[in-house]
Image 1 (spheres, helix red, strand yellow):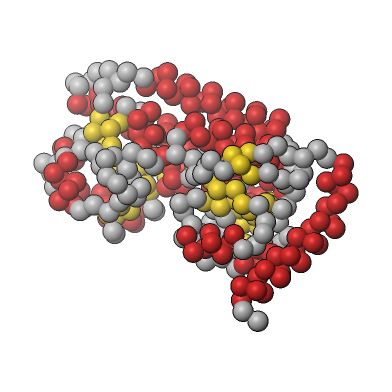
Image 2 (cartoon, rainbow, N blue to C red):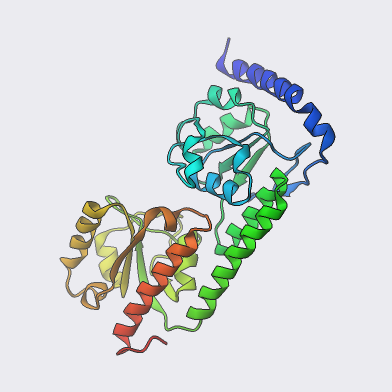
Amino acid sequence: MPRTDLIRRMARGALFACCLACGLVAAAEPPAPAVRDDRGVPVSLGAPARRMVSLAPHITELLFAAGAGDAVVGTVDYSDYPDAARRIARVGSVHALDLERVLSLRPDLIVVWLHGSPQRQLERLALLGVPIYYSEPRRLEDVASTIERFGRLAGTEQAAERAAAAYRARLAALRARYAGRAPVEVFFQVWNQPLLTVNDSQLISDVLRLCGGRNVFGSLAALVPAVSVEAVLAANPQAIVMASAGAENDARAFALWRAWPRLAAVADGGLFAVDADTISRQTPRIVDAAQTVCEGLDAVRARLNGGRRD
């Protein structure tokens, strides 16, 4: 039997079993409201999601933040926060799923990373017949709105609203503190081999903007573009912020730039690292990363302005 037919048959069987298992719950609960995903497509469920599969670490973390952690029955490698996420069944990685394992978990909702999963993988997921929500927060505010939307899908609105409000309050405090500070030219280094950065559409650039930083490669077309050492030297950023990949790798990355003592970021002491997980995952913990970035850029700003930070 062709694999596509097998997947369709398994999907029908999984959905039938899910209906039998969840029928009493569905009869007792009102339908979950339609919620637009990050493609702008409405996702409608017959009842609040009770068996969800998360296909990215940041999605797993957001579902827990929304009070829906108990409903997550499957996730992917590196879903390690909060601690309870480590105990959830694995269905592969972001780039390589075990579709039969996904189906065996009888999900009533699958949440995928819109631009983090290969298109072919997403096309295969569409064959499963299970509602799919596509997630990709691009701005800091999107983290809060995603938590709220997940809460509506899972029927955990109150917990989600509390988490979103707490996140917004921390974000507002940072904005108030760093608003109006003198701009600092920044190169954000995602990885050093190859040398990767982000453009202005990526969430990390919103962190830089919050802190008064200007991404020197913000206008590039790719979300995560590769750049050359020569391009960084030509841009001559006042600060180089790195996603930390461990002490040994960080030391190599710092050594690369210290070989160019005339580079502004080197001459003015503008090299520093931030925890990779907190800065790269679109979750409430990104505020912790933003705090680190804002403090680092403020220190650069003070050195450039003779002790003044404004």
